[in-house]
Every structure is written in structure tokens, then in C-alpha cells.
Image (tube, rainbow, N blue to C red; front, side, top):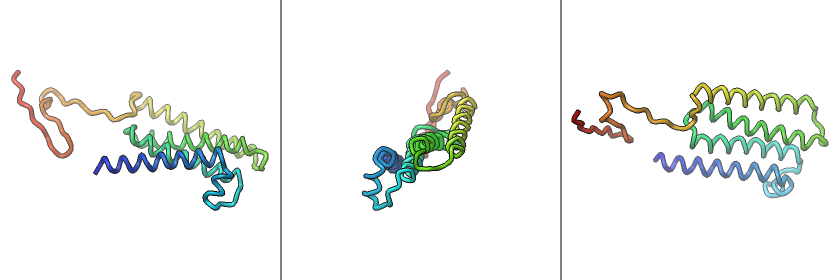
Length: 151
């Protein structure tokens, strides 16, 4: 079952990333395809958020720490959101809004770096090694294996 869940998460993540890139790169085409009123900035925002969601799903497949995954996904979305505000500054909005979104992205980046350091620079899954008296035992799924060792 775990394999199916990972495949579904990967497909959803890729779909969200593709949707996000499409909305960011070709907002008119995206709006027409989904029958959404064409407003470049709002479609760019949709793209930024989809990119963040997709990154979160894909990172969850390779990183073991949920907080690091959430911070990284937020960071991806916030950077894309900041970029969309900069690109769309001719459509309105306040410079303060763009600056605030950029500050949040920097705060997320800082928190991610701190979390990475807290984890000893290891974001992937690490299998613990058994202490010497337990070295002959290991778990695979629901089964515990015992090995006889002659010392």
C-alpha cells in the first residue's frame, strides 16, 4: 500500500508543479483552459500557490522531517508569490505588500536553515543502527528478523 500512496503523492505533486508553472508562464492560456476570468496577477498567484503545494508533496517523498518539508514548500510558494508581485507591479498593489511577502520568504528560508542544522544536516530518512546486543535484529515492514551471531 505504501508504494501506491507514494506514487499518488508523486503524481499529485508533479501535477501541481506543472499547473503552477503553466499559470505563471502563460496566464492567458491557463485562464482560457480553466474558464477563469483573465487577470494576470491573480492567475500568477494561483501558479505560485500550486508550485508551493507541488514542492511540498514532492519533498515529502524524499525528506523525513515534516517541519522541514512544510517550511521548504512555503518557501517555494512565497518566492514565486514575491516574483509575481514584482512582475505584476504595473497592475496595482502596494510595494509594502511585496516587501512583506519577501520578508516572509526570508523568514521561512532562515527557519529552514535552522531546522536543517537542528537535524544535523540530514533531511532524508536515516535508519538507526542497533546497539551491539541487538545488532542481529532488524525490522522490515511488520517482520522482525533475527540473525544468530557467534562472537
